[in-house]
Length: 173
Length: 173
Image (tube, rainbow over all chains, first blue to last red; front, side, top):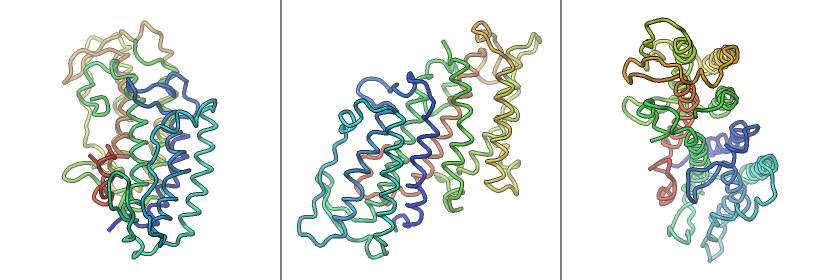
């Protein structure tokens, strides 16, 4: 059994506010910091979530529900935010994410998903056959994964300053 | 160099609201869920944070700043919440955490910490010599560690329902 639609909506609805409360008003040296190399900053993560809500989750749910013969998803561009977010402030991104997420929750409610819809199948371009229940559950877990990531990126900035407590703090290990 | 006092206050101030954003209004089967065995639920984590704010962080900062000869911290009881939270609702805990955290941020501001205070030393009962800068940084990273944990506990409940996407979701690996 995959996630209940009510739990999915309950959790998906929280993410824009949660990210606002995590990030709004933090100094740039934290908003733009990453975990080294090509890793992402909190700012990059918000852009990535917007791109997913614009191009990925709802269109893929619609493909699962449709009776078209070509049920292969478009590949998801994991780097689109580096172009899309250009010249935008964190405030712009947080507001854009709130807006698209609100629209998408409305679209999700309008689908009036029933238990039998969870078995409707489609094809992921890299992962192969998937079903609607897995896709809906993944949307929720993907949000949580990025909340997890943002808390870890912030903690990373202080990893050398906790002294011997590092042994107790899983987030900096 | 440890965390700036202004960044510490900025981040510590967010945590009660973040936990409310994450948890208030979730069904009990998520609030009380854990990661198996003796691991903690989101409900347990909020109780643990209250206990830390009541007994640990500010008293330890005061020991660092004091001129007493016995500068050994009291051990922290990591299981106190199982007794303290009895008969309390999640709402009770979220409100109690908000209140104690607000008081503690006031206390932290009143300490008017200067750079030289960061070197003031004390003795952790298990970790040995530590300094005030490490303690203040650890307070912040400890909050982030538990936000990280709560997002992971929630994701854990859906780990078997994401199908092949599991390969892409670090939080359930």
